[in-house]
Image 1 (tube, rainbow, N blue to C red):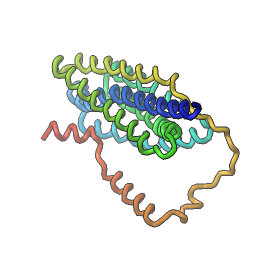
Image 2: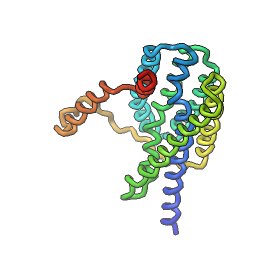
Image 3: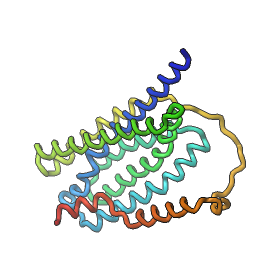
Image 4: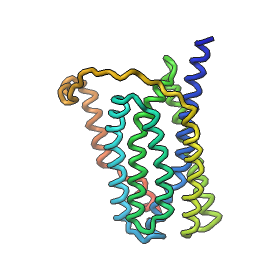
Length: 246
């Protein structure tokens, strides 16, 4: 009986975390694809400005992922960190709604990427902790499926609103307002999520560079390749603008 309760707890947590990501992605993807259009067509920003905004925002997100993982390990509190991230989604949409220039959009994107940077690691840890023995891949698969479903729904909703209301500033504002609804729904799932809290330990910490020589040759090669591809990667915003001006 207790084993069944434990399995139910694991399944519920995976589904709840997946639903959080699903509704959060509906909110995010309603806004993200149209943001470069809003910047250039409504606010009069140049493609170079769009590139600067995305470069700053994505760099911040990547750097913060390292620190969020460290904080969640140190303080053993993953759920509050993840909640703060998703809560910044509300502030992000409100910032977009009241931004009157590309500088306001930059501040909004920094808020959004700050949130994404601090939630990715703790959320993934909670998914891993909620997975049953031998079902780690299945758990992440369910979570990713719900996450991608949210992305598809968000893009579709944004497309439909702009299609039927026209390409004007009021339509964009409507999208920003409507995108607040799914992120608020995502936050409502958090009280039902069960977090496993491990006792804090005071194990001696080792500097990561002291053990770099113990990394395998294949792992080193993989890291070099990933680094090169990351340096050459272009943002989705740049690709969207390129498709429009071709």
